[in-house]
Length: 165
Image (cartoon, rainbow, N blue to C red; front, side):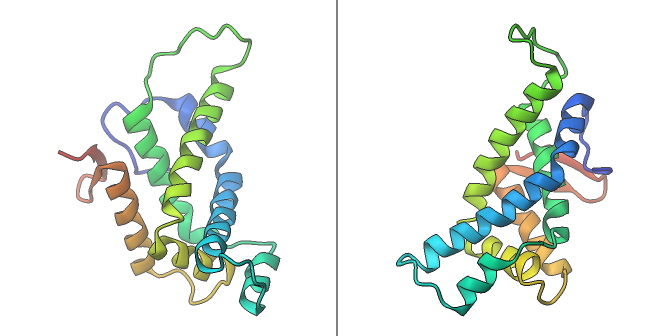
């Protein structure tokens, strides 16, 4: 997650929670993309060769969405996190609470992203079918869509995220 910082990005517990769950959540994103693809493009549930192929893949190449995950995580920290720890009365650790809150918001975001045709096709092509390798164009398009959805801007010169004006 190095480099996707913003001023006052000091919530190290939240960063840790996001990093610990990264691989599991990346795979969840791919599974959501497959599910959304089937729901939109195959509403009758017919199983043809293509559907069988994408459903039967068991190992995903998540490199395409890894950087996008980092942007989602940094965007979450920018928009929703605080450096102040809350009093927890239920016995859970702050790390567990951060992990749960982050996962809930992440799931909401990827659900919406997976109904974007460009996002969904890029994930299925690169992560599931492993066709064409990772292209800079696909990554940039994905990041552009994410930044627009989160109402954020990326300053490439300063390597900083900021809320859109």
